[in-house]
Length: 299
Ligand SMILES: Cc1cc2nc3c(=O)[nH]c(=O)nc-3n(C[C@H](O)[C@H](O)[C@H](O)COP(=O)(O)OP(=O)(O)OC[C@H]3O[C@@H](n4cnc5c(N)ncnc54)[C@H](O)[C@@H]3O)c2cc1C
Image 1 (cartoon, helix red, strand yellow):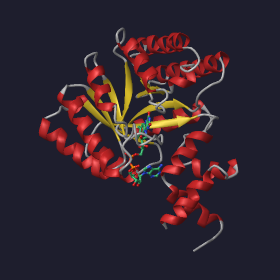
Image 2 (cartoon, rainbow, N blue to C red):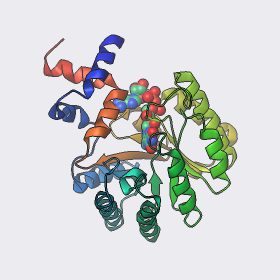
Image 3 (spheres, rainbow, N blue to C red):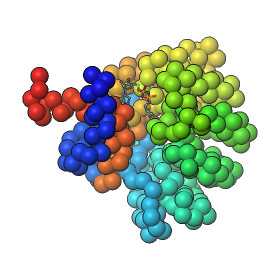
Image 4 (cartoon, rainbow, N blue to C red):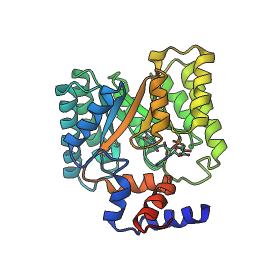
């Protein structure tokens, strides 16, 4: 099975887009903002919060960054108009981070200002290691003026404990995840347990320092360990939340919801669904294999 999974992972990027789309439907709310809104409304009805994400990756020029800004701005308007229990996640490279940091800051700041007006929040997603310093600098600059902005910490990165120490001094507000990008061993933990151990060490530091954290994982081991740590430290329910991705481990999601934990789902939508979906499929080739068997009636 492991061999088949490896083959599927290596084939994902060679698959025709329509096939990838069949797998991807599980992970994305749809192509349009309206489809995103309808998924969020459904989650809200069940007491689950959302963070909305307009799919897209690094852009090539300022016009594309402005386009990303306009789409994100529209999402904030809809969150406000439709009274959604949701905030917005953005990828800083979509707003020109690697083209011109000042230009990117101006665009993201406009979003943070509007989000503040609407009493909601902007989360800066963390991207690959070539962007980490710039995303942290952007966060710290925004955070010095606004409380309604947060960042993501990746447990796979060896630098993360130092980054937290730096950011806690200025009011860190985190989503803690393992990290999706494959990084060299020199700068990243690669072993499953090493990453888990660092995740728990980072969580401990964040909670001890009294910073808000979104515990973003589908790993039962981490969820159980986090629950124990939260209880041992006596952390109040309003000081943290669990976070999961749309379409992943719905059993665990429903269980956390039943248990009364604050829970937020990452709801991506939009026409640029391809790269996001490939990352999700590489994470879980079992899904690709199951659908492949269905399509070709392999039993
Ligand atoms: C809300 C949220 C936001 C995130 N934001 C970022 C970010 O900004 N930057 C970043 O680098 N990473 C981000 N991630 C991704 C994260 O870093 C991990 O890659 C991802 O969550 C898988 O790690 P895991 O902790 O769930 O553990 P894993 O060990 O990978 O997964 C645990 C179990 O969950 C199930 N599972 C995991 N992934 C899938 C899948 N795709 N399909 C079906 N089942 C699956 C499997 O059963 C697996 O055994 C985010 C994750 C979440 C939940």
